[in-house]
Length: 360
Image (cartoon, rainbow, N blue to C red):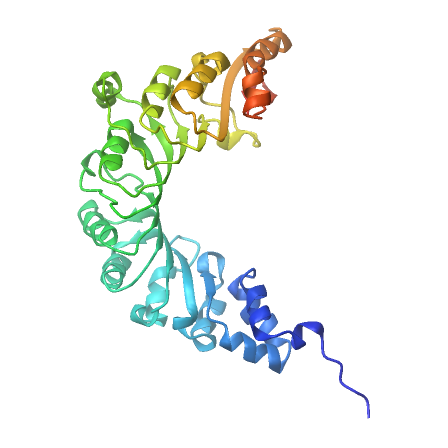
């Protein structure tokens, strides 16, 4: 009689296989690994840390999922509404009862519409979510405010990613994420908005702001002396969509004396590896490595990591090599290379009669 040889995967303890599953997407586990043999079928049924991203799942696969898995074994969920994915949130709500997701800790909703807003708002008041991402809304602002108010009242919420889209952020003075430790805001946001949020977020450790700009409403805050310091913030990332000077940045950064990690990118960062034309140019003052050196030494002494992306335009007939050397020289001092071990590099992209000179 021929002996049946088992694969190494089949003889592994269930705990090890479940650790492997932690690195796989849910579709691979359910539609591929589960079908290999009876042992893996059983191990798959016992697994209780599924992370489902329904964003690109086909309608046919979507309808099979409720028959394959118990909702209590799902800890992370991503859903998206769009013209191309058959009203996914509505379909999801027809296939599952939200109160079955008793162990869900992470939820991502993309283009949440009026229909799903009420159901998820009711669910949020009863759940224990720790991470939530809301990437744009497709409903009225009054209902958005009610939904976010319920979300921000969660005692368990620690990480929040929020894109308000075209919602009037100037009216968002009720936005108070008191318990959140990690916050990502996708704009447009100005310093007045951010300053208000910081004043009401005593536990915030990490703040990422995209589409940031300085506008007229910020002038009184930027120029006033004695701005409050937020000692609790240790990581700050800023993606700007307007011209910001080193004076503006120094005024803002003085509020964060305990920063350990900082990222500062201009509006061209997203297009560095694409064929799109650059649309923003970093203010020349931000290229002043000596100014940064003095400021960091005196105001940000705990800073361990500083990532930046600055860009400027140069005519193609300009001596850009000389320009590059003059721009990068202030970032070649012992402070940058020996003390902090930070290196700055430069690249150029030629577009029509312009060279986009980038420092990273």
